[in-house]
Image (tube, rainbow, N blue to C red):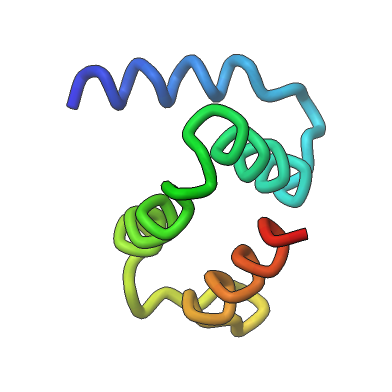
Length: 77
């Protein structure tokens, strides 16, 4: 887990001040495709969903299933 914590801190330090959640999500999506390949998208989304909580609902009332579907649509552009 130490590696995860160190990587998380590195990412936090690298994200520009004022970077919106939307911009961050776009950067993560593009990095995923560019560095890990499209074949890893489903695995990434499954892990992300699990980490966020399978029954999580954001402040706008979107379920993780809706978020997952929207992420898939974005990545297929």
